[in-house]
Length: 167
Image (cartoon, rainbow, N blue to C red):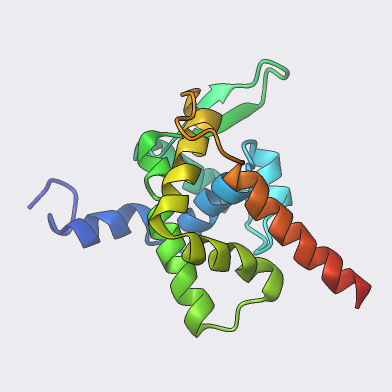
């Protein structure tokens, strides 16, 4: 057995890092909302995460090597959170999880649109999005030079919101 863990099972070890109520929500908001500051993550949390819970989850994700924190050059007391390669490689997991939820659970139209697009685009779209995330978070030039997946997902979300406002 691995020191400090219940077992060496990969599912168990993954759940020890990601299996609480908030960790994947924080990662989701960094990936899909490009929320990179503590205040943005807290203020725009649709689920209403408390500041102490957010701080604890960020600390856990930092310790696990899923995100990094760098000082924000515009403000001494702010930090900028970025995904690591480990964090970026969680995208297919989130895409599969959201696809399952879209298929079987009562998701809202505006929050389900990205799940639908990711499911329809499949692994090819995921790879393009991960390539884009590497550029955004790691500074690695994109291999894929097509349209922005991030922008496409955001535009679809905003289009649903605009449609709902007209009703």
